Image (cartoon, rainbow, N blue to C red; front, side, top):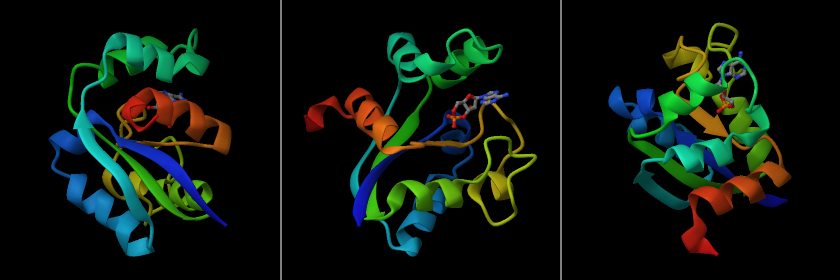
Length: 136
Ligand code: CMP
């Protein structure tokens, strides 16, 4: 069944010029881009987006990394898109991410780990409203 998911390319991916490389992997897989934009997250938006991680040791560094720098957010659609995109992205820690995945191929930093992808339908529905309020 066709479903949608949300990704955003973190500041390291944008600053290193990896936007085209990463987005093209999703297109080559057959996912359709339904929305795409460059933006910056305010501290307020970032804290809301990552509210489930509030209180964790990496929370403050994560918020500081993500805010005030360009990111590229997208909504992707395709068959089992949430699972497919998470597989293409790879494990959260780039040290553990398999070669061939985005984090496995391009990254090493666990905080600025190149890309975020929704991990469930519930997460997608919450996250898309935060990054794409204009769609609602
Ligand atoms: P993301 O998939 O966007 O979800 C939470 C983010 O927190 C994660 O990617 C990383 O950017 C960041 N993070 C930093 N350290 C950790 C950690 N030890 N475990 C999980 N996430 C971490």
